[in-house]
Length: 347
Ligand SMILES: [Zn+2]
Image 1 (cartoon, rainbow, N blue to C red):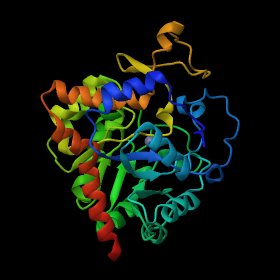
Image 2 (image 1 turned 90 degrees about the horizontal axis):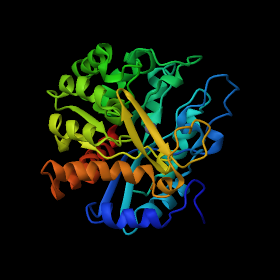
Image 3 (image 1 turned 180 degrees about the vertical axis):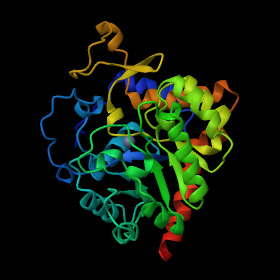
């Protein structure tokens, strides 16, 4: 069987052998990846908006394809993960959640439920009581008829849901809304409000608060540093400076590796200019207009590998080592997931 979205080449194999294999722990836990079947979303209606960058990289990835991808990307490693659907306006969250719940029985992995804000508390609870589901992944695109960024966290993750989750002590992976991300004081205030009002929730801020560019990290991280109950996944971050700030402000014990697969089967690097990040990639995507010469593009490896190497290199550069990499790439998430899998027996 071949994977639909990538094929390892010599550049990847060399990168793995030199930059990743010697540093990664025996077991890897991926705290942020998307898994779904094609039928878990209807085709998007035509729009005159430009395509978002992930759209052309990879379509849905099933549990079987995820397992295949992991075995090829991480030879000799055992990989478990926390999975959820790819939320969009056309998603069928209930079907996607049920697929993950059933499919992950008997594995070491777990899932979060996609939760449209229109669901009532009872419906939410029924989702959370399904096997292997330990929490929720709300998202702004699950607001019916909404197609923007400028919303409150509580518009797509309502208090009614947070109350249920707090009572259970469940997991919330939170995608920060609003264009200015962690530089927007409303986002900071809402994260702190969740911590104050719902202290039993395991709160994980996705993508280091979407701090792909350094400015968001520089402005936002100090405001979230004090509360040790605010955790982060590293998915989709390739920026070594952002890893450095996160390691310094939060410490390795509050960070968990996340892949954001299947998007990071993309091949390439990133460059940062102010608050903007530029995906340099060899993929023939319609948005891919800032190309490098072919001989440079030929040296690109998978973006996921670049993201992991940025984390590893920064850890070593700051004087951290094996212990911290073991924590970030496995133990921090594994410990919490295991705790919730036990606790959920009484949900
Ligand atoms: Zn994601």
